[in-house]
Length: 198
Ligand code: GDP
Image (tube, rainbow, N blue to C red; front, side, top):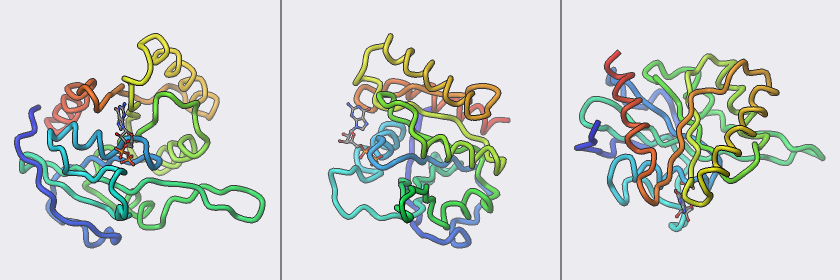
């Protein structure tokens, strides 16, 4: 699929106020700085559609973009941890969990993971949350240009082990991308196109 139009529609923190057109939508989420804005800009071929972290004051909202007039790309806020007494607790803002639990148009979530890092507890918790909530998702490993191909495969194999140790029977479908050189762009867009055609 080639993206010929990508149009910002609305930002909000209330799932009820998301567009009510019955178009399939694909949500992108991950820890802050994982490369989500860069990936969205790469996929849509627009340099500034999603804001990148070099710009301060990024809003923490659900952002809907209409693509090719027939599906929505949804840019969700990055997630993080809150300190709760001595333990750390993963926090996924309430409107985010509401989005995943209530949004009927959601076809697939893409969970972004920095390919350089060891599996992070918060990402594994989030993946488990999606699984328990019955939300279909794929993993997108980002920033592949920062490491070699061999190391990338090693890191993915290590990630797979962690995911299986975390109760999954198999590694979820995954993609490897680099926003620097468009690596993985066709694979992700072809996946979306194929799902839209089903
Ligand atoms: P976000 O906070 O998840 O939206 O992350 P951004 O897209 O703003 O990216 C965070 C930082 O990582 C920025 O400095 C980007 O230039 C850099 N970055 C993002 N994607 C890539 C990538 O694929 N390759 C490289 N080398 N850097 C990247």
